[in-house]
Length: 353
Ligand SMILES: NCc1[nH]cc(CCC(=O)O)c1CC(=O)O
Ligand SMILES: [Mg+2]
Image 1 (cartoon, helix red, strand yellow):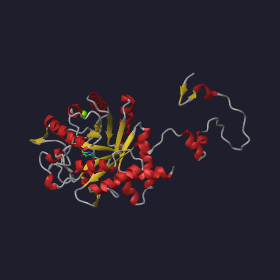
Image 2: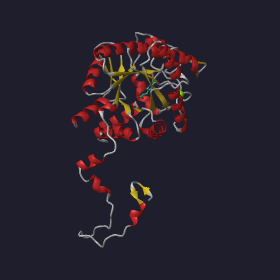
Image 3: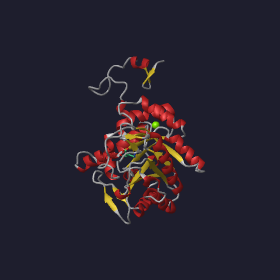
Image 4: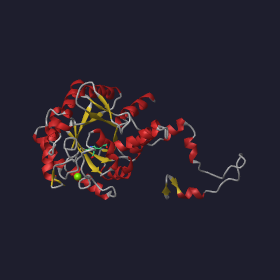
Protein backbone atom coordinates (compact mmCIF):
# COMPACT_ATOMS: atom_id res chain seq x y z
CA UNK A 1 0.00 0.00 0.00
CA UNK A 2 1.50 3.31 -1.05
CA UNK A 3 1.77 5.75 1.81
CA UNK A 4 2.23 9.42 1.23
CA UNK A 5 1.95 12.01 3.98
CA UNK A 6 0.80 9.39 6.48
CA UNK A 7 -2.36 8.21 4.72
CA UNK A 8 -2.61 5.30 2.28
CA UNK A 9 -3.25 6.69 -1.18
CA UNK A 10 -5.86 3.99 -1.85
CA UNK A 11 -8.01 5.29 1.00
CA UNK A 12 -8.40 8.57 -0.81
CA UNK A 13 -10.57 6.76 -3.38
CA UNK A 14 -13.03 5.41 -0.78
CA UNK A 15 -16.61 6.11 -1.83
CA UNK A 16 -18.36 8.73 0.19
CA UNK A 17 -21.70 8.37 1.92
CA UNK A 18 -24.58 10.41 0.56
CA UNK A 19 -24.78 13.77 2.33
CA UNK A 20 -24.46 14.59 6.03
CA UNK A 21 -26.72 15.86 8.73
CA UNK A 22 -25.13 19.27 8.28
CA UNK A 23 -26.53 21.35 5.44
CA UNK A 24 -23.94 22.63 2.93
CA UNK A 25 -21.19 20.48 4.48
CA UNK A 26 -18.43 19.74 2.00
CA UNK A 27 -17.92 16.10 1.17
CA UNK A 28 -14.64 15.75 3.07
CA UNK A 29 -13.43 12.58 4.76
CA UNK A 30 -10.28 14.24 5.93
CA UNK A 31 -10.38 17.52 7.83
CA UNK A 32 -6.86 18.37 9.11
CA UNK A 33 -8.32 21.17 11.20
CA UNK A 34 -9.86 18.62 13.64
CA UNK A 35 -6.44 18.13 15.26
CA UNK A 36 -6.14 21.89 15.77
CA UNK A 37 -9.53 22.49 17.34
CA UNK A 38 -8.35 23.15 20.90
CA UNK A 39 -5.16 23.85 22.79
CA UNK A 40 -5.15 20.38 24.41
CA UNK A 41 -5.45 18.77 20.96
CA UNK A 42 -2.69 20.92 19.49
CA UNK A 43 -0.44 20.03 22.42
CA UNK A 44 -1.16 16.35 21.88
CA UNK A 45 -0.03 16.27 18.24
CA UNK A 46 2.82 18.78 18.56
CA UNK A 47 5.99 17.43 16.92
CA UNK A 48 8.67 19.72 18.33
CA UNK A 49 9.18 21.50 21.62
CA UNK A 50 11.55 24.16 22.83
CA UNK A 51 12.85 23.86 26.38
CA UNK A 52 15.33 25.86 28.42
CA UNK A 53 17.83 23.04 27.81
CA UNK A 54 17.99 24.13 24.18
CA UNK A 55 19.36 27.57 24.96
CA UNK A 56 22.88 28.93 25.00
CA UNK A 57 23.07 32.55 26.14
CA UNK A 58 25.74 34.83 24.59
CA UNK A 59 27.02 37.65 26.84
CA UNK A 60 29.15 40.64 25.90
CA UNK A 61 31.86 41.64 28.35
CA UNK A 62 33.48 44.98 29.08
CA UNK A 63 36.21 46.12 31.47
CA UNK A 64 35.29 47.77 34.76
CA UNK A 65 33.02 47.08 37.68
CA UNK A 66 29.31 47.45 38.11
CA UNK A 67 29.04 48.53 34.52
CA UNK A 68 26.34 47.93 31.92
CA UNK A 69 26.55 49.63 28.57
CA UNK A 70 23.79 49.41 25.99
CA UNK A 71 24.63 48.02 22.57
CA UNK A 72 22.99 50.56 20.28
CA UNK A 73 22.07 48.14 17.51
CA UNK A 74 20.79 45.45 19.88
CA UNK A 75 17.95 46.91 21.95
CA UNK A 76 17.80 45.21 25.36
CA UNK A 77 21.38 43.89 25.21
CA UNK A 78 24.21 45.31 27.34
CA UNK A 79 27.93 44.88 27.54
CA UNK A 80 28.60 43.68 31.09
CA UNK A 81 31.50 44.09 33.49
CA UNK A 82 32.64 40.78 35.00
CA UNK A 83 30.67 41.23 38.24
CA UNK A 84 27.52 41.86 36.20
CA UNK A 85 28.22 38.81 34.06
CA UNK A 86 28.38 36.77 37.27
CA UNK A 87 24.92 38.12 38.18
CA UNK A 88 23.62 37.04 34.77
CA UNK A 89 25.18 33.62 35.30
CA UNK A 90 23.13 33.35 38.46
CA UNK A 91 20.04 34.31 36.49
CA UNK A 92 20.89 31.64 33.90
CA UNK A 93 21.22 29.04 36.66
CA UNK A 94 17.81 29.95 38.05
CA UNK A 95 16.32 29.80 34.57
CA UNK A 96 18.00 26.39 33.97
CA UNK A 97 19.84 27.68 30.91
CA UNK A 98 22.69 25.15 30.60
CA UNK A 99 25.39 27.29 29.04
CA UNK A 100 26.73 30.82 28.55
CA UNK A 101 28.86 32.03 25.62
CA UNK A 102 31.31 34.88 26.32
CA UNK A 103 32.40 37.65 23.94
CA UNK A 104 34.69 40.49 24.99
CA UNK A 105 34.69 44.12 24.00
CA UNK A 106 38.44 44.64 24.14
CA UNK A 107 39.65 48.10 25.02
CA UNK A 108 41.02 49.68 21.81
CA UNK A 109 44.36 50.33 23.53
CA UNK A 110 44.80 46.54 23.86
CA UNK A 111 44.12 45.77 20.20
CA UNK A 112 47.04 45.23 17.85
CA UNK A 113 47.88 43.74 14.45
CA UNK A 114 48.46 40.28 15.93
CA UNK A 115 45.58 40.24 18.40
CA UNK A 116 48.06 39.44 21.14
CA UNK A 117 45.53 40.10 23.92
CA UNK A 118 43.77 36.91 22.78
CA UNK A 119 46.48 34.79 24.37
CA UNK A 120 46.79 36.79 27.58
CA UNK A 121 45.75 34.35 30.34
CA UNK A 122 44.39 37.31 32.27
CA UNK A 123 42.31 38.87 29.50
CA UNK A 124 38.70 39.88 30.03
CA UNK A 125 37.24 36.57 28.86
CA UNK A 126 39.52 34.54 31.13
CA UNK A 127 38.71 36.80 34.06
CA UNK A 128 35.01 36.30 33.46
CA UNK A 129 35.36 32.52 33.10
CA UNK A 130 37.18 32.32 36.43
CA UNK A 131 34.72 34.61 38.22
CA UNK A 132 31.66 32.76 36.93
CA UNK A 133 33.12 29.29 37.54
CA UNK A 134 34.09 30.29 41.09
CA UNK A 135 30.49 31.13 42.01
CA UNK A 136 28.62 28.80 39.70
CA UNK A 137 30.76 25.81 38.78
CA UNK A 138 27.73 23.91 37.49
CA UNK A 139 26.96 26.24 34.60
CA UNK A 140 28.56 25.50 31.23
CA UNK A 141 30.79 28.13 29.67
CA UNK A 142 31.57 28.39 25.98
CA UNK A 143 34.33 30.65 24.68
CA UNK A 144 34.68 31.84 21.12
CA UNK A 145 38.06 31.28 19.51
CA UNK A 146 38.96 33.85 16.86
CA UNK A 147 41.10 36.96 16.85
CA UNK A 148 38.58 39.61 15.79
CA UNK A 149 37.84 41.08 19.25
CA UNK A 150 41.57 41.61 19.68
CA UNK A 151 42.94 42.74 16.31
CA UNK A 152 43.26 46.38 15.29
CA UNK A 153 41.98 45.41 11.81
CA UNK A 154 38.96 43.42 13.04
CA UNK A 155 39.81 40.22 11.17
CA UNK A 156 39.69 36.76 12.73
CA UNK A 157 43.26 35.96 11.78
CA UNK A 158 46.73 37.35 11.15
CA UNK A 159 47.22 39.43 8.01
CA UNK A 160 50.10 39.81 5.64
CA UNK A 161 49.86 41.89 2.46
CA UNK A 162 46.11 42.07 2.88
CA UNK A 163 45.79 38.28 3.06
CA UNK A 164 44.52 36.32 6.05
CA UNK A 165 47.18 33.76 6.92
CA UNK A 166 45.79 30.32 7.68
CA UNK A 167 48.47 28.21 9.31
CA UNK A 168 50.11 31.05 11.24
CA UNK A 169 46.68 31.99 12.60
CA UNK A 170 45.94 28.42 13.67
CA UNK A 171 49.04 28.43 15.88
CA UNK A 172 47.75 31.53 17.70
CA UNK A 173 44.24 30.08 18.00
CA UNK A 174 45.64 27.02 19.76
CA UNK A 175 47.25 29.28 22.34
CA UNK A 176 44.01 31.27 22.70
CA UNK A 177 42.04 28.06 23.26
CA UNK A 178 44.55 26.92 25.86
CA UNK A 179 44.37 30.07 27.99
CA UNK A 180 40.57 29.88 27.92
CA UNK A 181 40.49 26.18 28.79
CA UNK A 182 42.99 26.70 31.56
CA UNK A 183 40.79 29.47 32.98
CA UNK A 184 37.98 26.89 33.24
CA UNK A 185 36.10 27.18 29.97
CA UNK A 186 34.11 24.01 29.22
CA UNK A 187 33.53 24.36 25.49
CA UNK A 188 36.02 25.81 23.05
CA UNK A 189 34.18 27.20 20.03
CA UNK A 190 36.42 28.15 17.12
CA UNK A 191 34.56 30.70 14.97
CA UNK A 192 37.46 31.79 12.81
CA UNK A 193 36.96 29.44 9.81
CA UNK A 194 40.67 28.75 9.34
CA UNK A 195 41.34 25.29 7.87
CA UNK A 196 42.68 22.68 10.26
CA UNK A 197 42.07 24.60 13.46
CA UNK A 198 39.89 21.99 15.11
CA UNK A 199 42.57 19.29 14.81
CA UNK A 200 45.25 21.67 16.05
CA UNK A 201 43.17 22.82 19.02
CA UNK A 202 42.22 19.23 19.93
CA UNK A 203 45.84 18.24 19.86
CA UNK A 204 46.82 21.24 21.98
CA UNK A 205 44.14 20.54 24.56
CA UNK A 206 45.04 16.85 24.76
CA UNK A 207 48.74 17.57 25.14
CA UNK A 208 47.90 19.91 28.03
CA UNK A 209 45.87 17.16 29.66
CA UNK A 210 42.60 19.00 29.03
CA UNK A 211 40.92 15.86 27.71
CA UNK A 212 37.40 16.77 28.84
CA UNK A 213 37.25 20.20 27.27
CA UNK A 214 34.71 20.00 24.46
CA UNK A 215 34.93 21.58 21.03
CA UNK A 216 31.89 23.08 19.36
CA UNK A 217 33.05 23.98 15.88
CA UNK A 218 31.51 26.87 14.04
CA UNK A 219 31.75 24.42 11.17
CA UNK A 220 29.48 26.02 8.58
CA UNK A 221 29.88 29.71 9.16
CA UNK A 222 28.83 32.01 6.36
CA UNK A 223 30.08 35.47 5.41
CA UNK A 224 26.96 37.31 6.49
CA UNK A 225 25.51 40.79 6.77
CA UNK A 226 23.64 39.56 9.84
CA UNK A 227 26.76 39.88 12.03
CA UNK A 228 26.62 43.68 11.86
CA UNK A 229 25.29 44.39 15.36
CA UNK A 230 27.74 41.90 16.92
CA UNK A 231 30.64 43.83 15.41
CA UNK A 232 29.13 46.94 16.94
CA UNK A 233 28.93 45.14 20.31
CA UNK A 234 32.56 43.97 20.34
CA UNK A 235 33.81 47.18 18.76
CA UNK A 236 35.16 45.75 15.50
CA UNK A 237 32.58 47.33 13.18
CA UNK A 238 34.50 50.56 12.73
CA UNK A 239 37.93 48.98 12.42
CA UNK A 240 37.11 46.06 10.12
CA UNK A 241 38.89 46.54 6.82
CA UNK A 242 37.24 44.75 3.92
CA UNK A 243 35.16 41.66 4.50
CA UNK A 244 35.60 38.06 5.60
CA UNK A 245 34.76 36.31 2.35
CA UNK A 246 38.16 34.65 1.93
CA UNK A 247 37.54 32.55 5.04
CA UNK A 248 33.81 32.54 5.86
CA UNK A 249 31.54 30.59 3.50
CA UNK A 250 29.65 31.87 0.47
CA UNK A 251 25.96 32.06 1.31
CA UNK A 252 25.08 30.37 -1.99
CA UNK A 253 26.48 27.00 -0.89
CA UNK A 254 25.17 24.01 1.05
CA UNK A 255 27.20 21.04 -0.27
CA UNK A 256 30.25 22.94 0.89
CA UNK A 257 28.72 23.17 4.36
CA UNK A 258 28.57 19.38 4.51
CA UNK A 259 32.22 19.12 3.53
CA UNK A 260 33.19 21.68 6.19
CA UNK A 261 31.19 19.85 8.86
CA UNK A 262 32.63 16.49 7.84
CA UNK A 263 36.17 17.83 8.22
CA UNK A 264 35.52 19.32 11.64
CA UNK A 265 33.99 16.08 12.89
CA UNK A 266 36.98 14.12 11.58
CA UNK A 267 39.30 16.63 13.31
CA UNK A 268 37.63 16.02 16.66
CA UNK A 269 34.69 18.39 17.03
CA UNK A 270 32.22 17.15 19.66
CA UNK A 271 29.46 19.40 18.40
CA UNK A 272 28.95 21.39 15.23
CA UNK A 273 27.29 24.70 14.52
CA UNK A 274 25.62 26.42 11.61
CA UNK A 275 25.68 30.20 11.54
CA UNK A 276 23.72 32.43 10.96
CA UNK A 277 20.53 30.66 11.97
CA UNK A 278 17.18 31.54 10.50
CA UNK A 279 18.33 32.22 6.91
CA UNK A 280 20.24 28.89 6.98
CA UNK A 281 17.70 26.42 8.41
CA UNK A 282 18.08 24.30 5.27
CA UNK A 283 21.75 23.87 6.16
CA UNK A 284 20.87 22.90 9.74
CA UNK A 285 18.52 20.22 8.42
CA UNK A 286 21.06 18.78 5.97
CA UNK A 287 23.83 18.75 8.56
CA UNK A 288 21.67 17.01 11.15
CA UNK A 289 20.36 14.43 8.69
CA UNK A 290 23.78 13.71 7.23
CA UNK A 291 25.91 13.44 10.35
CA UNK A 292 23.54 12.88 13.30
CA UNK A 293 25.88 14.97 15.43
CA UNK A 294 24.88 17.34 18.21
CA UNK A 295 24.04 20.28 15.96
CA UNK A 296 23.62 23.87 17.04
CA UNK A 297 22.51 27.01 15.28
CA UNK A 298 23.45 30.59 16.10
CA UNK A 299 20.57 33.05 15.93
CA UNK A 300 22.96 35.90 15.33
CA UNK A 301 22.93 39.54 16.32
CA UNK A 302 21.24 40.75 13.12
CA UNK A 303 18.43 38.24 13.53
CA UNK A 304 17.94 39.44 17.09
CA UNK A 305 18.06 43.08 16.00
CA UNK A 306 15.44 42.58 13.28
CA UNK A 307 12.93 41.06 15.66
CA UNK A 308 13.69 43.47 18.50
CA UNK A 309 13.48 46.54 16.26
CA UNK A 310 10.22 45.48 14.63
CA UNK A 311 8.75 44.71 18.03
CA UNK A 312 9.85 48.08 19.42
CA UNK A 313 8.09 49.74 16.50
CA UNK A 314 4.93 47.81 17.22
CA UNK A 315 5.24 46.08 13.84
CA UNK A 316 5.11 42.58 15.22
CA UNK A 317 4.47 40.80 18.49
CA UNK A 318 8.05 40.48 19.73
CA UNK A 319 7.42 37.70 22.21
CA UNK A 320 5.59 35.51 19.74
CA UNK A 321 8.14 36.16 17.00
CA UNK A 322 10.90 35.23 19.46
CA UNK A 323 9.29 31.91 20.42
CA UNK A 324 8.36 31.07 16.84
CA UNK A 325 11.89 31.78 15.61
CA UNK A 326 13.43 29.59 18.34
CA UNK A 327 11.06 26.70 17.73
CA UNK A 328 11.94 26.86 14.02
CA UNK A 329 15.48 25.79 14.93
CA UNK A 330 14.15 22.69 16.69
CA UNK A 331 11.96 21.89 13.71
CA UNK A 332 14.99 22.15 11.42
CA UNK A 333 16.77 19.54 13.55
CA UNK A 334 18.95 21.69 15.81
CA UNK A 335 19.72 20.34 19.27
CA UNK A 336 20.14 23.84 20.61
CA UNK A 337 20.38 27.52 19.75
CA UNK A 338 22.74 30.31 20.70
CA UNK A 339 20.39 33.24 21.10
CA UNK A 340 20.39 36.67 22.65
CA UNK A 341 16.75 35.95 23.49
CA UNK A 342 17.82 33.09 25.79
CA UNK A 343 16.88 34.68 29.15
CA UNK A 344 13.62 36.14 27.85
CA UNK A 345 12.64 32.89 26.19
CA UNK A 346 13.58 30.89 29.29
CA UNK A 347 11.44 33.18 31.45
CA UNK A 348 8.54 32.68 29.09
CA UNK A 349 9.00 28.89 29.01
CA UNK A 350 9.13 28.69 32.79
CA UNK A 351 6.06 30.88 33.25
CA UNK A 352 4.18 28.46 31.00
CA UNK A 353 5.26 25.72 33.40
N1 LIG B 1 34.52 35.46 14.67
C1 LIG B 1 33.81 36.17 15.57
C2 LIG B 1 32.37 35.99 15.67
N2 LIG B 1 31.84 35.11 16.55
C3 LIG B 1 30.46 35.27 16.49
C4 LIG B 1 30.15 36.24 15.55
C5 LIG B 1 28.79 36.77 15.18
C6 LIG B 1 27.73 36.58 16.19
C7 LIG B 1 26.53 37.45 15.99
O1 LIG B 1 26.41 38.16 14.99
O2 LIG B 1 25.70 37.43 16.89
C8 LIG B 1 31.35 36.68 15.00
C9 LIG B 1 31.40 37.77 13.99
C10 LIG B 1 32.10 37.62 12.73
O3 LIG B 1 32.46 36.51 12.32
O4 LIG B 1 32.33 38.64 12.09
MG1 LIG C 1 36.59 24.43 8.16
